[in-house]
Amino acid sequence: MGFFQRLFSPASARAELLEELAVLTGRNQGLVERLKRHAPMTAPNIKTGVEALAEKEAGHVKVLNSILADNNVWSKLPEAALHDGSNNWARLSGDLEVLGTLAADLRLNAMRWESVDDGVAATLLELALEDEVRESELRKLAMMCDAMALD
Image (cartoon, rainbow, N blue to C red; front, side):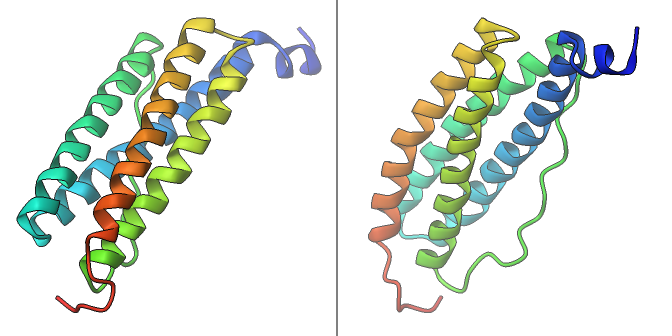
């Protein structure tokens, strides 16, 4: 098999997509950790919402890890945040940014999976759509925080 055949073979495309999915899974795990870390710092009514979002995102991590495990791939470690924020609004706004980027990357990844595995593509698209709804929930929670208040 020649270089270009290996480069453009379905097996190499699948391996590349699995590598990207491993990175996305690690980023999703990082979001779960951020949400769990930030929830106790907020007011009780906001804390409940952030904890619920963290649990829902933990479910996404389980789904993504099961896809990876079926292909004998492990998720990448989440990257630590450089700065969490000096108040609840800044922390939740940072979480919102991570969630939005993750949802967009899941949508793009789902589109790329369509030519390799329709089942994985459908699962990723479903997760991305759920994340879009969660973006709205997290945005509402962040708006409940006072942007000028220092902790």
